[in-house]
Every structure is written in structure tokens, then in C-alpha cells.
Amino acid sequence: MFFSAKKNLVIVLTIVCSTGIFGLDLTDLSYNLADKFYSLTGNYEGTTGFRSLLIPSGGRAESLGSAYTGLADDISYIDFNPAASSILENTEISLFHNSWIADSAMETIAATTRIKNLGLGGKISCFYVPFSEYDSFGTKSSSNYYTETTAVFNVSHNFHPGYIFKGLAVGSNIKFSWRGMPDYSDKTTGKTISGSGLEQSALAFMADIGIITQFNFFKFYNSRESNCRAGVSFSNLGAAITGFGGSIKFDDPLTTSAGIGFSYKPLRPLTFSFEFRQPFDISALDEYQIFYAGTGFCADITSYFSILCGFQLKGANPRFSLGSEFEIFKMRFNLNYSLDLTSSLNPVNRISVSAKIKLGDKGRKEIRLKVDELYSYGLSLYADRKYDEAIIAWQEALKLDKYFDPAREAIEIASQYSSMLELIQDLTDYNNEQE
Image 1 (cartoon, rainbow, N blue to C red):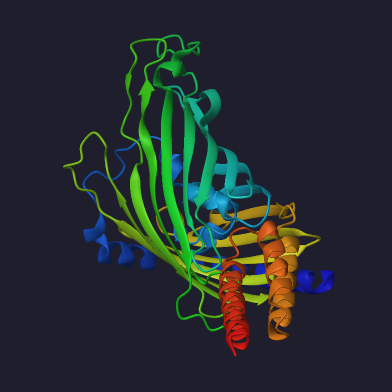
Image 2: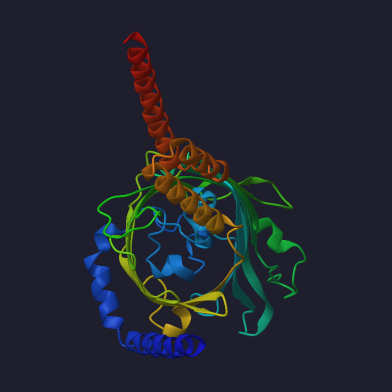
């Protein structure tokens, strides 16, 4: 398995790099596409603060064109739909690196776990770009980094889960972001003014809200898991303040948006995802902003190797993504290349990498297997007309999983049938006594 995964990695790197080299000669394509989609450019584009909140961390979500609100099936949910932590199978820890424009990058560490129907998670990300200041003679007078750092705390709960209806998951993120501006120099003396960057720094307080549900629709394979998901989320609801060290005031509006997404898995190895998102300004709801949308596709070639691709149309510059997921020694990696015309055609600048460690499902799979075994055993007893024993087996299954509807329905049917047989027997005995 190790050598197969290694071979797949070489193939993916070859595809990604060759795609990236081709991207070097796409300047004309960039201009042509920008002209075609110019009508989708909003009047308020670029007027919001904390723009790093719009940069994808990388990983599976970016490979799928950021169409993730209605899928959210791994730790990347935290950026798209906070409700999903309560329906994830595994406890996960993940590291992300996303190279952005020029020397800028996004670094992220995230973790999530699930306790029965309660989901918990957290994330810390940092976007940074070198900041250099030059004097009137072109000499570098100071050098530092502009940064935007965000901390996220997640909690969610899946209400009324069952065997057929998987429940309605509701969740929220609480977010804090800090924009760090480096100190700048005095124009007269050329000396760096201590604390001067603080006045342009900012602190943001935000919340995300999400809902997601699962169901079956045109499913062509057998599985207890649903093949469709639908979700709704509101991102970056809040405000930011700036002017520290001087007069405190509200900063620019945040990158607030509402999204709706849907995912569909017609066959076990194939997944499609779709998303529509509408940005808005809480302080000026009458100022309409242009929507954006994305779609993604994933093909599971084997249990440890997948190919992903995505497309997102946002403003006049579309984004194409091509990625791969592969598993080595119980670690799942994602390597993604994005031809992002909002940033650069340089392939080196648009590669993201993530590493995800799955730390188990807290015994949920083992419990499901035991429940299925008890249910099947009860069916065999029922077929042998051992109704009371069958009911006991199904009651044991419900002790392990109180949401296992087939056992509850089987108990009801067996109880009714057993009661009917007792009634028939009582009537027969009464008739015999009368005779």
C-alpha cells in the first residue's frame, strides 16, 4: 500500500506541476476571461477589512472550488459550515499551508472532535506578507510583516438523529481576528516610530452560524450513510475596531456573507458539490453586492487515493482547482494547485498543502457493527417465531444506539403480532371451554 501511495503521489505531482507550467503562458487568457466576466464585478469589491478571511486555508475544500457549505465532511468545515462538527466521524488534527500572492502565505492549524451528538473544534490561522519601507533615496529603512491572525472556537449539536432522518445539525463559531500593522518611519529623521503601527492595527469580533442536514436521494449503492447533504451558513457576522493608541473607531466592514450549499453522491466513489454565496454589509444592507458561486467534484480511485477538481466564479476572475488526496501511514495529505486569476498565474504561488491525522471515531463504528449484529439476530429469531427473544435482542440494540429506528419499529411489530397471537389463543381457549 505504501508503494502504491508513493507512486500515486509522483503521478499527482507530475500533473500539478505540468498544469502549473502551462499556467505561465495564460496572460492573454486572464485578460479575456476578465473581460467576459466584468459585469460580475461589484461596486463595493475590495472595500471590506480583514480580507484574509476570504483566503482558503487549503486542503479538500479548496480542491472542490470552495463549494463546501453543503458537504463539510472533514475538518475544513470550520471555514464553511460550523454545524458539521457534530456529524463528523473522526477526531481530526490538521495542518495547512497555502502560498498566496508573491511572498505572502496562510498557515493554519485546526482540530475537531465529536462526543455523541456534540461537536467541538478550533482553529488558529495566520496570514502574513513582508512589509518593507523605503526612504526617498530608495534605501530600505524598515522591514517587518503585515499579519492577520484569526482564532476560531466551534461548537455544534445534531438534533433528533435517526436511522432514516439523520437529524438537523446546528452550530456556531466564535472568532477573534487581529490585524497587525508594522511600525513606520518618521519622514524627517528616517527613524522608526515606536508603536506607530498600532493605530492602524485592528481587532475584530465575529460569529458564524450554520445548519446542515443529511438525507437519501437517488442512491445507487448500499450504505447506512446518507448520500445527500444540504447546508446554510452565515459567515463573519460582527465588527472590527481600530485606532489603538489614539481614538478608537469602527474599522471597515467585514467580509460578511450568507451561503447555501448542496452535495450529492450518486455512487460510492463519486461526490458532487455546489454552492451559492451572497456577500452583504450589516451596516448597509441596501448596498447590493455581487454573489459568487462554486462547484466541485471528487472521485475516490481507491480508499487511500482521490482526485478532486473545482471551479469558483467570483467577480471577474474565475478560479480553477485541481487536487489530490492520498493516505500514507494513517495520515491523509492534500496537494492542490489553483489557477486563480484573482492572484497570479505563477504556479508556485498557488499551491496549497495540508496534512490531516485521523485519531479514531471513539468506537462509533464498532457500536454500529454490534447494533447491526443484534438486529440481524433478532430477525432470525422472529423468523423462527421466537418473538419474545427477538424483542430482547432488539432492545439490546437500542441500548447501544437509541436512534436505531429499525429496531424500534421491529419491536412494535413483534409486540403487536405477539399480542394478536395471545388474543387468538385466549379466544380459542374460551371457545373450547364453552364447548
